[in-house]
Length: 174
Image (cartoon, rainbow, N blue to C red; front, top):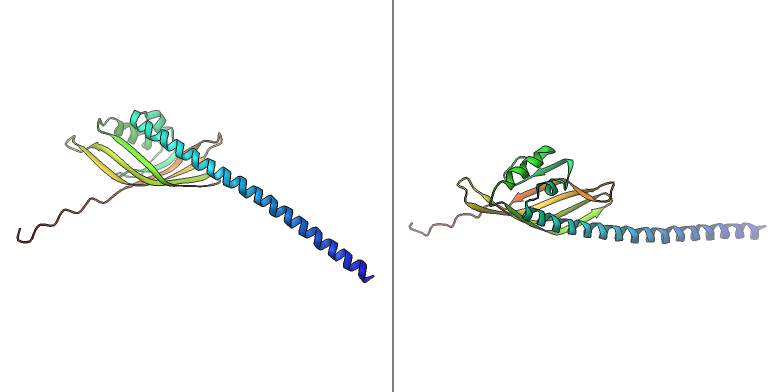
């Protein structure tokens, strides 16, 4: 009977191998689909950021605020963190400034499942205390969460201004 045992063992091994190959092939298909979904999500976020820049130019408060979840937190240069209605208030105040303008561009967009982030640089123009236009540049990270309707909304928005340039050193003897 050794031949029957050997045949059964080989048959069992072959079945496991086929099963493993099918699982692997299935995983490759899932990985390909996940990569396509990730690419589509990154493309959607990039397109959304383009629209976001246009909404800044149009000073469209409702669309700007509508990008955030109701419990989102935002940190803007020189300001304390705001959440919920604080995001709306910050935008309302900024849009009252005739010199206010923001433009930004992502350097990197990464997605994983329901979360994504965008990292890049921005330039903001606004009025100083003397109502003169000033410009601030810096970096940002925005975290998005996929919504039930398939859209992406901001849950965390952090911006950091670049440090001010150091004043030029005085010439020796001055």
